[in-house]
Length: 271
Image 1: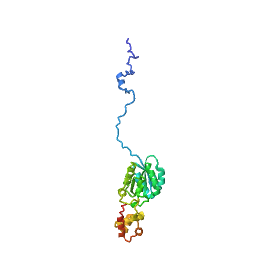
Image 2: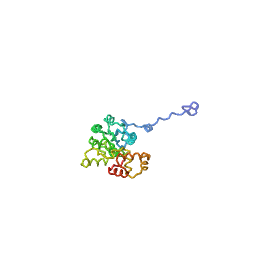
Image 3: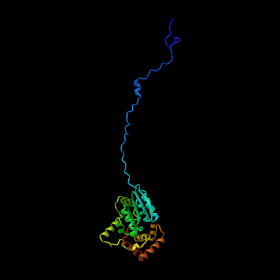
Image 4: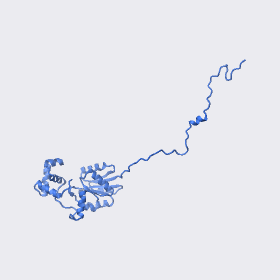
C-alpha cells in the first residue's frame, strides 16, 4: 500500500500558495533614506544687489494760488523720494508743523514772505528745515533777496522754474546744499561787491505792475501784437488792450516803442 505524499489528503499536490520568503537585508537597506543628525544644511543663497532707497523728503507747500499749489503737489508727489505733507497759504501754519521728524523742506511763494515773516524763516532754518523761496517775476516780492538769505534761506528760484529744476532744488536743500538761480547769484554778487545799492530791493518801474501786466509788457517788448499776446496768454484781445492801457498809464509811456525800451532797459529776466 502506497502512502500519500506529505501535505496531501488524496494523493494530489497541495495547490495552496506558500508564504513568500522574507526580504533580504540588502533590499531593506536599499529603500531606507538616511537622515543625518542636526539641523538641515542652509540653502544655497546668492546675495542679490539691491539699491539703497533714498530717504523720504517731506515737503510743506506755502502757496496762495490753487493752480500753482496743485501743480507743485503733482510735480513733487510724482517723485518716489518726495511726499507733500502740508499745503497752506499761511506761513505761520507751516512753522507750526515744520518741527517734526524726518527731512523737511518748505516751498514758499515770495509774495507771502513779508518783513514780519522773516523771523519765521530764520526759525525754520535754525531748526534744520530747508526753505525754497519761489521768486516773483522781476523780483517784486515783499521781502528782498538779501533779507531772505540773511535769514539762512539757501533756496531761491523763479516761481515759474521748470518742474525738474524745482525737484532738484528740494533734493539739494534736503542734503543741506544751496539751490540758487543763476540770476539770483549774480544779483547777490553785485550786492556784495558794492555794484548795487545796499537796499535789499531795488525800486524799479516795472515793480509797480501786476504779474499779468508785466507779462503783457514783456511780450510787447518782444514785438508781439495784441492778437499774438492774446493767443500766448489765452486772453481776449480786449483784455490785452485793457492791460496794455493800464501798463502805459502806470509807467507813464505813450507808445509801444517807449514801453519796449523801458522793459529792455530794466532787463527783466524771462519768466
